[in-house]
Image 1: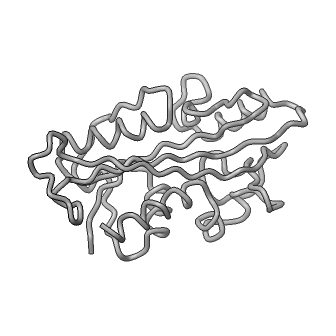
Image 2: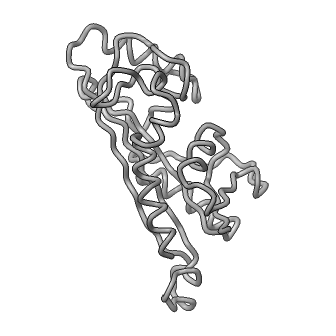
Image 3: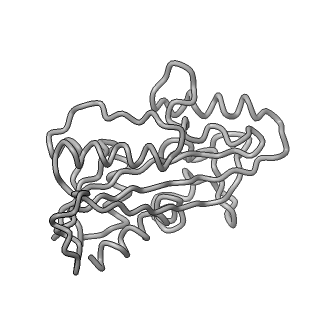
Length: 208
C-alpha cells in the first residue's frame, strides 16, 4: 500500500479522502508525521494556498504529499467567501456556525442564491518516484500536479441536515433538492467538489 501525506489534521477531510481513495493508498495526516506547526496559508487564491501548504510539508519533511484548499463562491456576494471560507466570520477560525450565519445574513432574501464549491489540490511527488522519469539531478526535487473540482448549486434560506461539515447544511447541489448535510456522506463523496478533485488525483496516482 502506497503512503502519502495529506497536509491536514481535519478528521472530516481525512475520512472523506480515505473513503474516496479506498484501500490502495494509506493517507497519513500531519499528526502521523509529527507535524504540529501552524502551516501558513496566506495567499489570495485557492491554488496558491494549496501549493503553499504542500510545499511546506515537502520542504520540511521530504515526503510526497498533497494539500487542498476549498472555497464557497456565492455569485450575489461577488464570490465571497471564497478563499476566506474557513475564516469568514470575524475573529473566528473554522467556526462553521458563525460562518454560515454571516453568509445567510449578508445574502438575506436575495433571490440570486447561485453558488459553487471549488477545491484545488496541489500534489508534490519526489522526482525519483515519477514513473519513467529520470530527474534525480533536476533542480526541482519534486514535481507539482494540480487538480480542481467544482460543484454548482445554490444557497438555501436556512440550515438543513446534520451530516457533513462546514457550509454543507446550507449548500444544495444542482440536481438535488437537499443540502449536502441532508444527502449524507455516501452521496456527497460521489458528487462533491472534493470528490471530483480527489478522483482526478486518484486517477493520476494509480498511473504513477
